[in-house]
Figure: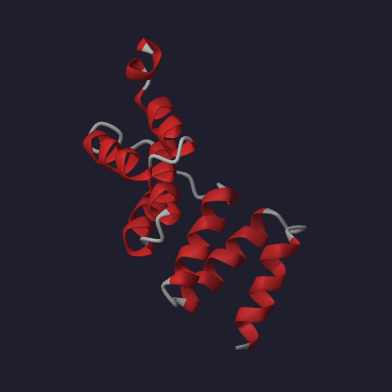
Length: 119
């Protein structure tokens, strides 16, 4: 157990894996100042808020993760879904375009982009 406390991101991931979402979010919020420039941490926190359908609170974490690494397709995918949940079509289109640019064979992003642009 000592390892989990030496590695707070591992503990955060374990809490999420175990379905302890509220505890994970509270724990993560306490770590935020220490990990504010950590892409992985920001991605994990955005994911935690997405799991509990709190997309408004998830978005700033995905935005920060994007600032720290704008080539992370997984983050861009969750960011796209968050924008869709918040009915932010243009932002979702922008994310899809970025995904397709990074991964031209990403058919899911390509299809979603075409669908959003036709609306």
